[in-house]
Amino acid sequence: MKKKRAFLKWAGGKFPLLNDIEKHLPKGECLVEPFVGAGSVFLNTDFSRYILADINSDLIDLYNIVKTRTDEYIAAAQAMFSPTTNDADVYYQLRDEFNQSQDAFRRAVLFLYLNRHGYNGLCRYNLKGEFNVPFGRYKKPYFPENELRHFAHKAQNAEFYCESYAQSMARADASSVVYCDPPYAPLSATANFTAYHTNSFSQEQQAHLAEIAEELVSKRIPVLISNHDTALTREWYQQANKLHVVKVRRSISSNGGTRKKVDELLALYRPATKSKK
Image 1: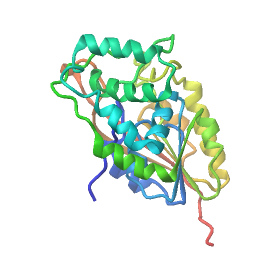
Image 2: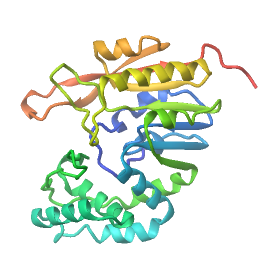
Image 3: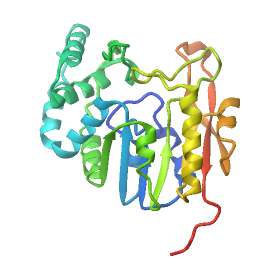
């Protein structure tokens, strides 16, 4: 079956890794994702229920609006995709409006516009919490109507929460499987690709995430975590049952001349034996 794409562009999105993730993701009734991002894993798996969380309130508000006000949202968002709005001056005016707006629906409409017209699908905020991605200069940004409708249909079986990874992982029960895609651990001491929201994801949080995975598997709840393959991540995930290395067709560099492929690690925490019902 052809893979379904997310309606958002997303740096570090899991679309290229879907086959590998599906291969190692345990079966269950409910999938819990504490770092849902653009939702590629959600869109391409077949669980009965989904608990999808993220600390980005703009993202979660957007998803709830697409779920509950689909036609209204698509009409309003589509109006933002025209030759007149694909302009740097207009983009920066609309970015300012987004940063000043208190209206959840209008922010959701502008979020998709900024995502598709901004540079490289980045989602980045400054320390004041203001979206600050520059104009992307695309010839004709794509309006993802089919992707929005598929998301809205699938979202009828999903609950969206704006909360921390610890809070959403606490929602997992005996029928759940947890998939964690935290902000990437740095490839080196000087590299840092974790400033996804106003708060970057610290090494302490990375280690804490692994500890929660160990607690959940002790309660017979399986957990799969994806991250860069580094000495640190292997240390954090040393209690996992299996560490799978995946070759990634993805580059981590702003300098196109020095791009290199990096390995991804899939750490599987799985109960030793599954009790039969």
